[in-house]
Length: 71
Image (cartoon, rainbow, N blue to C red; front, top):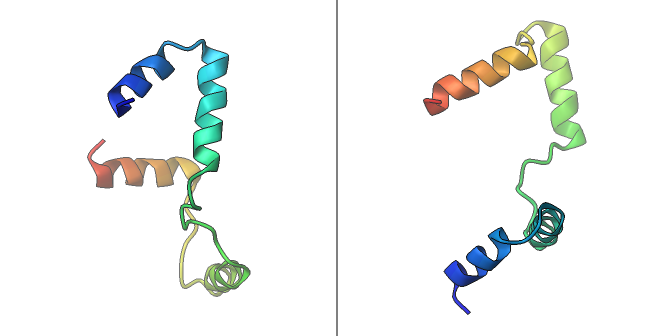
């Protein structure tokens, strides 16, 4: 079976079944590499506390990401 055929069949499934399939497929992928270590958290806390960096709101983060991605 070709990927296009699988996609067509999957897209015709009811919402609940598509969601279940999506979870099953995502569970088979390796981690995205976006995990943050304890050391990274501690470093970032030190930077914030020392004033080296300034915190931004979630809304500001989203705005910057969209701007950088041209969205």
